[in-house]
Length: 469
Ligand code: ARG
Image (cartoon, rainbow, N blue to C red):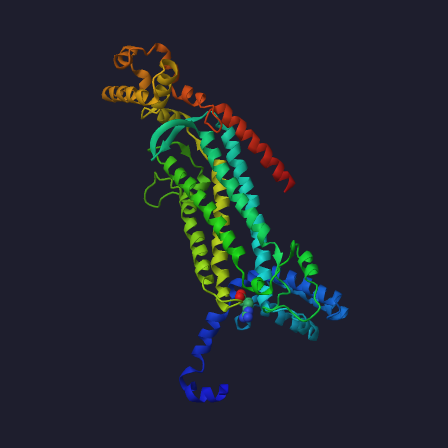
């Protein structure tokens, strides 16, 4: 049935509204226009290769490239007029090319489809985005390592169950995040390695009968090699999912640190002071300093992990090769990766500015009998008690200190000897928080000498990288 006769049958009600909604659901240009730089780079590489292979004339190549460069300028200078009727970035660019150079524009799409085109554009975009993340993550690690070096001997309570557990140093705590971020970076680097293959030339799904040179386009776009299977090339979005997955883990780490910043900056804890740059006031309560930036960083993991889930479900059950479902990959990804990038930068800024309140931290480190384990260890080491017995003796001593409302180091020797007569005054040498952290010299332990060494190693490594990058 022709369109006209169909319209004659139901056209009275449906002439305009269904097509408007069709345009609305179908068009992606509102968000995929940000792929214009990648789209143009891909087209230039493709056109050059077509010329080299004698598939189109050198004169056409020249005019296509000149036209595309003009369009690139229009886009960068925000002069390009995007049309929703033209659906997506690819057709907008191509149609503009036809307007500006005429007939040769029609030859650009030889041996290519929007399916391999969009797969190429998106890989290029994700690759650039990962490179940006790697740089910012390096900066954040460097801020953390510098702050860690400055606070290698700043004692604070270490927590388990958010209950005071054993004293640690603030530097040690910060270096824990440097380690997490190092794993995050290696996940991004790993994703980048796998994504760096070029789908261009897979065409719609089956490859092409034109004598194209896929190695040449791959090399021109800085890919390691062309992808191996044309069906896989146009239907694969693993590279986006891997990136969102790495970003989700990293955003989760940022969220944990953000939560600690929120807790530490409360007047009740008072461990840190955030600078004015990263706090806001309240319109009604004049005394307030709200850690909004940290709260937003804490929340962002929701968007990032949400995008991962969203795309995973879009891809689930899709038959090979391309389906329009896959157009839904971009909007959530852009939103997630944009907000992740902002969270990373905000975190780097907060870390640089935050100042620890060393006195508060030190006092809190001594509360809650945090050196009880040091006492038990002393009983094992000096008196030869089995650890379980030492644990029991220490428990009895803690109960006594609690009853009197004093710290362990404030108890008298006689009180200790009532529980275990062989205890000598030498025990007091391990009961202070500073002695406690200084004694934790085991590999990876919190002793200031360890922390200083690790912090310096990181700083050296990261500064070198920064210079190289
Ligand atoms: N805008 C489309 C997308 O992002 C481009 C590919 C369209 N291909 C097609 N056969 N309709 O997925």
